[in-house]
Image 1 (cartoon, each protein chain N blue to C red):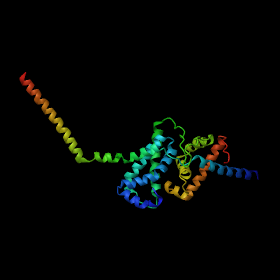
Image 2: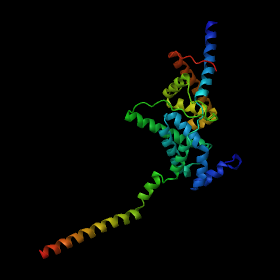
Image 3: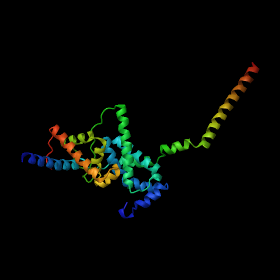
Image 4: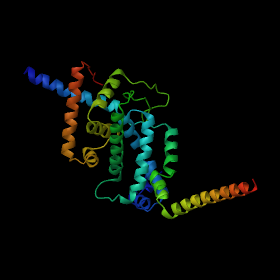
Length: 89
Length: 190
């Protein structure tokens, strides 16, 4: 009898616990600035889009080609200047 | 957005074809719910914001792969959130950072803005206990109480049967009650 009464009390405790859970875990309203910022963020290019741009081999080829040509031009000009300056001296 | 104008199937079809406005509608509909979920799982606003953004970015990138096989879009979205939160917890445990602060207080939906934002000691103690539960039990409680989902809806997200969710919920309540008794915390009836 005593055990049954104790079990009943423990069951009642579960109801009280559920009521407290409902009072504690409530849906919240996120701050409006966060919602605005989030809206802005999902409009930005994603990491995947950036990666896709980087894996665009044609663009990469032209960029790499441009950089190498520029460097070669600079080296040629520097050598020509050095040669001319050396001859005068 | 008026409820009558919203047809999720149509919006999903458009969004999966790359229509950003359609995806924007999905965002407006689910952002608060996902934020709530992530916020309760992480315990701070900054990470909740960051992870919520990542959930929607991932959803936007993979929405073409989403096919409605009896799993609602919301369940798909929550699974993305769940995976990202799990990764976040794993990274944090690897870095062994300082434990999280208690959840900051935000106004509950429907509360008057001037309402005093104070949590009782009982609620604080309960929140701390919830945050110490295994992740799937935390998920269950958040989905049940914060999102007001049925066991069937929770089952769709957690990939469990309705009965399994019910059983897990009961075991979770028992575990919480035992913890309260161990700590001599007495919740008074409301």
